[in-house]
Length: 290
Image (cartoon, rainbow, N blue to C red; front, top):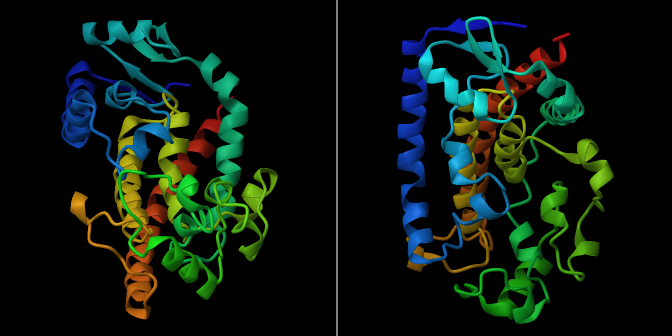
């Protein structure tokens, strides 16, 4: 199905804007990587999420768009593309192979969007990942715990754990697992994902990237930007002392800190809702393609 034939001048301008934006966003990370310097906040975006910088840099128009002109020829060497009359496009065979993935992502996004946001977790998942675990449970050895081990454990014990995101829950320490209000399992992910969850918003980047090149790079990059800001809030509210990296803590162990967290969490959830709707729309369009 051809949805648009893009003149070379039009699509190369979009491609170049994308590359320029990615260069700005990735510049600090690539400099640190070249120097062998770890970063406890931003490295997560390139380790937990398996998208390489080169993959993020490559622009895709999305399924149904035909790229015209000589500049489109390199796309014939990229996985998932094929030649058609007048240019190059994402192959229908790729959509057929990825259909089950598109169906899963659509189901997850639709279920998440159907629920009201829960904004009472206060980012305690990072605290639960080190609860009663000692030094072996500390995931960022290069930075100290703000309140030490005993203080961190006391915060967890003073509040309820209300995590709804399995991929955060699965890293809880054994002592933290039974403290969560709801036991989570991979097979129940669609049943529990909710739009207030910081990680559900971050994972929009994972799903958009996983669907590439079936979806356009503009939405992938917008999801990456959201994931970056969500990760920063995630770690500012964590038990780690990141002042040495320029991050002021969100002190969720205090009433005012929890209020600050909810305010920032709600703002990110609103932005995630818009991106979730855009990505879901693309999934439904793909699924409607014969």
